[in-house]
Image (cartoon, rainbow, N blue to C red; front, side, top):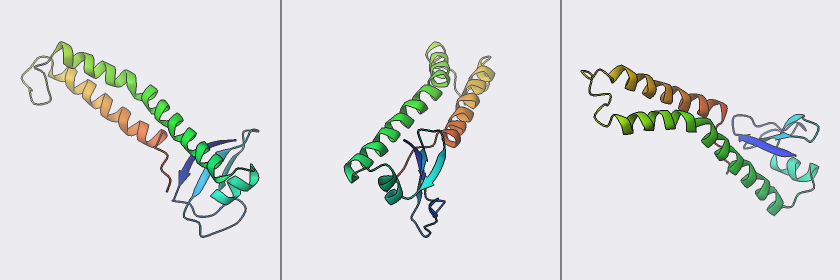
Length: 125
């Protein structure tokens, strides 16, 4: 079992229980994706509260690693350009390298947006 995330935009467990603060998105060992309240996660996998918290922390750490791996090439490209061209910025529009800067800047910005959609932080209460 692997916790993929948590959402407070849904409040119904796959078992039918309603009115929850949120649900955990869980992937079973068979690859099935479930949306479960914390009680169902603990009950279905026979987890103590401590073990459950450990699984959540594992999921958070894994997501941070995924985000770093995703954004690193975009950050590296932008940072390398800035190091090589320290006098170029979005405010130096007369510079012949301004369009290069803006292209890298925009690409990095779009990558961050994509990352936040596809790899959101796992936030739990």
